[in-house]
Image (cartoon, rainbow, N blue to C red; front, top):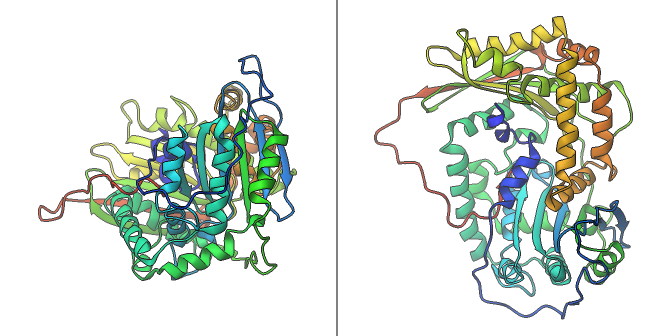
Length: 500
């Protein structure tokens, strides 16, 4: 089952976006000083609204200050998604201030030179829209879904807070308490999430991926408002951001609006975007961790270091990254896939649930995950052996033509369905920009995946699943302490700040 893939920080990013988008937001502060009068021209005045109008090709522009603008016209409904992508996430942090990228995402809703705390979301709601944001290892993303006629106002709001974020120390202190509680609820009170966090920390030594996106609690305890302001000044500059607009909008109109509202923001200094390489050293031998926590069932997660997709040009590493993605889909890409049939069904059942996923793309090193929850009477070690046995079987025997055809057909279908969602279209375009890839990345990857052969899948199953690439995490369930506090209810103040 794919149920565990949302625990992985770089797996199933689209699912994480969908979860974030489902959280509707409403402002709660009084309005501050008004923004400059925004253009109220409808974003759709030159286009009739009929279902017959298909999506046009996306277009990309770069303003003089370095900001990238990507526009995806889709005139089938009078709505627009605006997404601001900042190429700054937890991997851009340094030790001692983990969680600062996520904390800044929260503080971006707490005011600017012309917006009072909470006013941004209140104004979006008054437009008939909804907004939210999320932070990952690789980026921070802010998005709004609004009527097309409100794009000028929404763009003015986004540019204002990007250029002029302001928040008081008191606002920071209040929001830091919310983030700490978010960490307690989503990680410390969730044994499986705690397992994944500890597994990531063990798998990566030098890579900044060893730190959790939300931050270590000790770092949050000492985080200051000035730490957040410094991170904002360093990374929230036009050359490190992309504005994606998808929906009922004309490219030339979006460009004119971007020049008006974003063009006056000062470009970054040459030193602002300097990043030090932090390569991960070669692993020598299997690593194992155990997490003891109050839980009803054990869980085992296997993380294998694998190559990431670096560009779209054919190369041995890129071809292997794509073949590993096919392998993960064969193992767990559809109902009745190999892991489900072999481990969760029949008299030989060893697991209640299983999962496989491959981290195809990212700004840092990637992992291939296998996970399982032991069935009653079975152990984590038995599930671990069964998971590895299924990969070993593919390494010996390969995969069938029917399996390859099934997963490839599903990818093509998923790409077609994506075109029905302007949110998904915007996410796809922004995600490609973060990785430095072209606008048609999804189409190119699908085309490349369709060319992967059974021999390539068998070859990567033979190559990447040895002990020297492996970190194993086991959740060791403990009886619940009757004196321990009960699990916390959902956070009333944590509507922003979803992390991947």
